[in-house]
Image 1 (cartoon, rainbow, N blue to C red):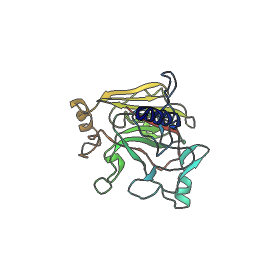
Image 2: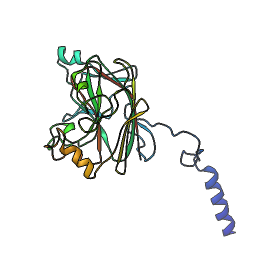
Image 3: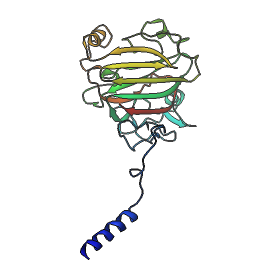
Image 4: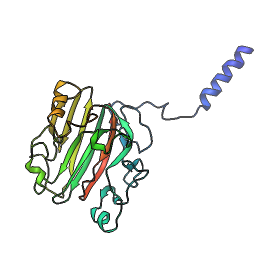
Length: 251
């Protein structure tokens, strides 16, 4: 009788157990869902760093909130340089709250005429020690190659690993058009892609990496590109710039 009661209790528990996502198997061929900001930072899952509606998860570096010149409209996060100047709204480089080491970042950007910006990674969020995000994090350049004077400088063009490694200047689209960007960092290998073209592929954390830093404008910054885990940041260089579809996964 006792055994019968135990078997009955177990059967009832199994039937009444709630069905959750953890109980369900996923087909190997089914694409991983992209989670929203602040949810499910599990390794391998694509997550949105920008939800297309708010600036949740972002703030101006060394501030408690994001500057008012950073706007959201129609699924785009953009810097309104006119509002920053005329309305005295705050801008500044913005940094995401989550830190990443090995990662695959995807986003789209477009730049204004003669504009300049950048995508910074492995930035250390420690304003008491570091004055700016670019004092610690390397940058993939965002630039109007056809109008900004930096385009005349090797290693300063769109798609370059800024001031460290130059890439081909043919991958970038004309000013005002959207560019698809990828940054992939895993276990000592770094790859930058612009519109499907690999603009930079290199190793990091080795003698070659530190030699690149030693021959760059960052050579006097002891913490620059030496910690291979940190935050994603978007640069305010004083020009209008637009970002959308910002997503990342940990590798």
